[in-house]
Image (cartoon, rainbow, N blue to C red; front, side, top):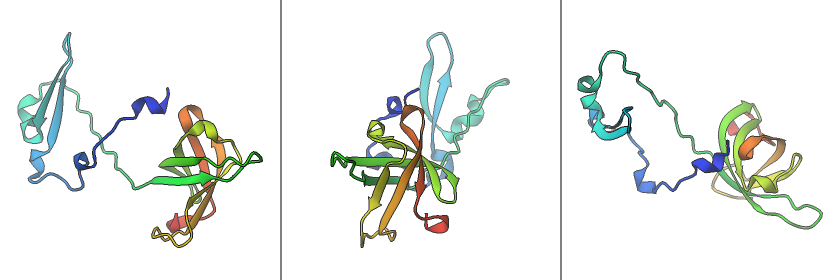
Length: 151
């Protein structure tokens, strides 16, 4: 599976920053698995009237963390230093994270990436990471030069 197949544009104004008010007015996608599946937009308060014995509920309890990093790969012998974006999605240790990198093909195990910059507002100044592993579909394991709560 390729992660980039799931990329899509999501306008900033479509990202919920707070829960719906009232809570039962949150949106609900109803999928009716008939011969030609039917999709319906409803609201959560409609749920009791929609459920029937044997129905399956799928809960999405994922949370979005502010973990999009932008940086540059340290130059190689040829002088190239491409821009890299990394979306951290799972902590793998005190100093490491699994991430999806773009463009992943520009990275090799052992490459170092500098995120941030001296004096930046992020509070981390320069944040360096080394590509510890490359996995399928652009996923990499990044080992950072900082650890613990700072990371």
